[in-house]
Image 1 (cartoon, helix red, strand yellow):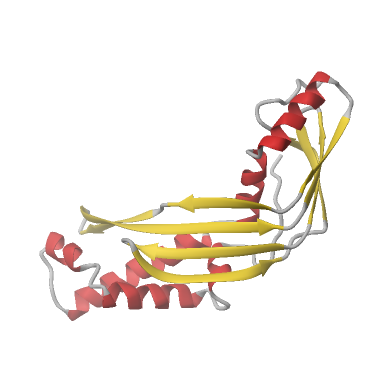
Image 2: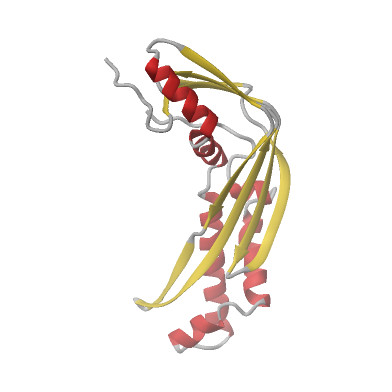
Length: 202
């Protein structure tokens, strides 16, 4: 079963830009300003404005796709699955089958760092790798979680503020902080295992 938390905005590119097309535009500007792709030109033994513009456009487009591929709800859910208080409650619920643990987390922060990259090929030959950094931080005012048989069954979240920093080859591209909207009450069907404490199901 796939569980998904619907958030607004939903993906990293929308957290950074109101119009996701601006991601590629801004990245292209930074790539050009920092002359980041000169080593690619050298590796490809190519030069000239036509090749440079085409290369910049392709890398910028790919970088925007990497950003778009990060689902903020999935990042949050992954962070909560690793939370110590929830894992401990999950173990207790396994030791007492059928019981339900209610866990309340006051203000807490979830951080997530991503390091995707784009491989550049010219006529089938690998000439370079362009590294990106995507750092996310979520400040959650309150979380109430229901846990049964080692599984996270439902969530009730308070206000959340999300911050993002996007970089390429160590140079900042963009950053932003915004309010993240989540469902007030989220039921997770058969539940999500926590901390390896999932009890076998009959």
